[in-house]
Image (cartoon, rainbow, N blue to C red; front, top):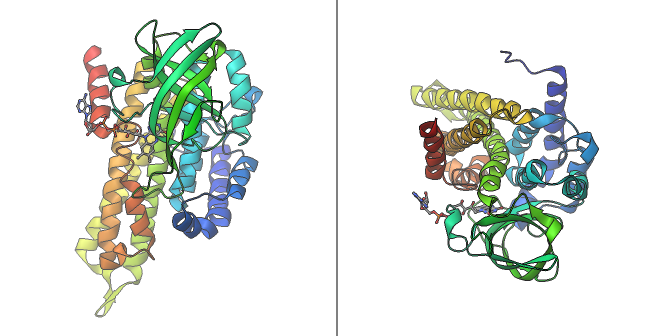
Length: 379
Ligand SMILES: Cc1cc2nc3c(=O)[nH]c(=O)nc-3n(C[C@H](O)[C@H](O)[C@H](O)COP(=O)(O)OP(=O)(O)OC[C@H]3O[C@@H](n4cnc5c(N)ncnc54)[C@H](O)[C@@H]3O)c2cc1C
């Protein structure tokens, strides 16, 4: 057991910190205000290999593993969580393709996505459900060398960027969910206006309409009727990113609270002297420490998955703990700041609105607990 970061891991961490300070800090307000991530940020992320971190070099990857990946997202997210979502959703889609795709699919999709020329998406949610695969209504019908897909996918991230979208549809043959890789912006693919959401401005959420979309048979992901394992396992890779970016939010909540508590004067001293403030700072530090080691462990586990169920369970419990802790931490940080914490000028108010999304996205907390209990009881 070794709780120290290696020399390489420290280098990755510091290059992400440098990136966040140099390139993200100056555009955070613009991203928030205009609800868009500037193009040059995407190309700089690619220059730093941040889309390529966990993948093998033969697919254009940086070979930094998921341990390197969590270290990077943690640092980026301390400054700008929506930028992490670009990377995390890309990894969610690519995680499924890496694990279930054919060699040809990996070559075709991983290489440009690692370069940031394309960004992957993962489309499960529909207007009727985001939690229950039995309720998905998008259909896939085999016709010659193609599958014809019809349906609507809701709240889809990265849908406005070119690249592969892992889509779950009920295929006519098995009657069960099946995974497909759809090339975004192919014929029959269209999108809605962006949803106007509470936080994570810059991360654009769209509904995706699939109208008689022809998916070549070679774009079937895994086997017919095997969408559920792809969903459960693939989304495990998304939860690594969700946890790492929530962890960054937690770190920022503690840093901002410490800064404010050391500077805000009350009578003859700073508010840091009050036990009520100290208890909050201690609670933030306790959450951060626990969340950090859970997330780092999940990253290390994802590098070499020995037991699929163990990975799915660990991803679910890590995502649950860390996103809930980050959400509570964002509230504590606002409390430390008093009314100033509610003002747009203060970083903690934006973090509060961003953090609320964590326990809901990629499976609500209750569903994560159902997954964990299901695996525990199956043993
Ligand atoms: C910022 C953001 C990004 C997103 N990105 C994507 C994306 O890229 N791809 C994608 O597919 N989706 C995406 N989503 C959608 C998101 O993952 C879903 O909205 C989420 O999983 C919850 O689904 P739902 O909203 O349909 O809730 P529902 O499934 O309708 O659940 C509503 C409530 O009912 C409870 N519930 C539902 N079923 C059960 C059950 N069987 N037992 C007990 N309780 C139950 C849930 O716990 C929840 O509290 C995104 C959402 C947001 C906000």
